[in-house]
View 1 (cartoon, one colour):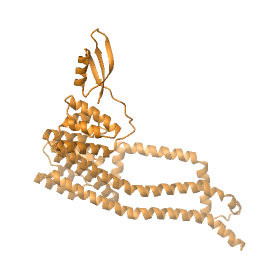
View 2: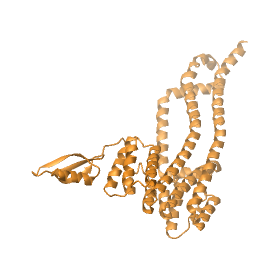
View 3: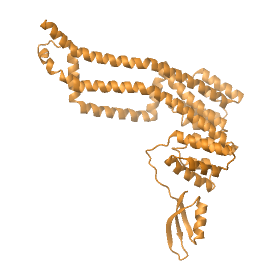
View 4: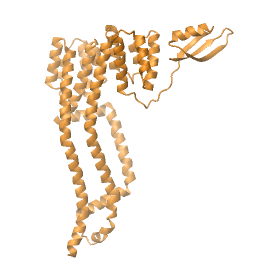
Length: 399
């Protein structure tokens, strides 16, 4: 039950401050009046949550699913929120739902109460829930949200899973290379002093020893420079211009450009389809999708489309002017607009692009993994060869 902090005046005219358990502000005010206290201010006492802990998307989808099941069973909204709140196990989400339930009890709209927590309930979810409330199909809107987030999680998991193993190989290979340079190679330097003085040390071995000595003596500088460089790249990439320039460069090439483009179009199609199916107007849907496309180039095109559509223009005509968007996609959009079934067409288009993206990632993995293993093996072979060549030469001279 929510806790409210109150400030009131007792019959003697003295000011009192305290905490009170109540289901809503109205009930808290009535309780104070029954105690012959005149309330001056009643505010909900909020427990500070850790900003570092993020609420898992699975917990949010669980909330949507339970609420949709209860509403479809004709349970009133307030009671459904109360039951869902009691069944929630995530402590952060539970505290947020307590506040939402309190505000809805006071007469506030559910979508407006959820909008106060943008880190948990994004603009897409708030808009879909608002449309579901206005159209009296909240249970269907919540079910559509659950499917949307689960599909997004599936695509995200596929991408992360595809990148994880190559990234692990790259990190392990880099760690092994640095370990060899710092700890292994210097152990052989005294053995090759005589060959170096006589000028009989192979060039490959000279280069390896020189690089190892330089790296070991300047390891702190290299570490600081690496960290600074990574931070500078991340800062540059987070700025809109930096991300846009990088994407513009990658989109010029067929291999990464097609994969990035399909990922962006699949996400855009899925989000726009969910909004249109739940009664959100197309201009409003485009403005919402603009902020969550994840691709600055697509966001610019969507923003321009929203302005044109609001003035009576066509979405497909605007997207045709974007060079990296294929004609197949724009023609599909045009067909959906003419048949007034754009939401359904976009949903099917998203499924097609998601399948194509999954296939492209699988093909990429088949080539990337052996390529990384080959690179690691080649580097190790060069290390061993540079160390063993002087030993072989010395043995040959002795014989």
